[in-house]
Image (cartoon, rainbow, N blue to C red):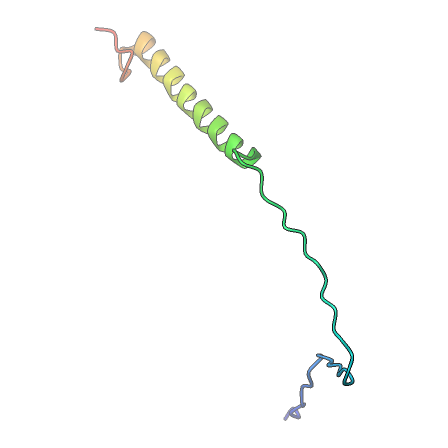
Length: 74
């Protein structure tokens, strides 16, 4: 059988002597840009292209076969 191995922590702690002052680092706050990012632009572009493709297919079906939803020829 395998032996149980004791896992030790990899954290190291440091102690400060009395009288030492810890310094804190300053953190710069960066605000996000307002508006749509490139991911949103890609989503809008894809939606518009898909709708245009559906309309083109429906137009073709309507004029060639009379079976389109929007462009049906009587």
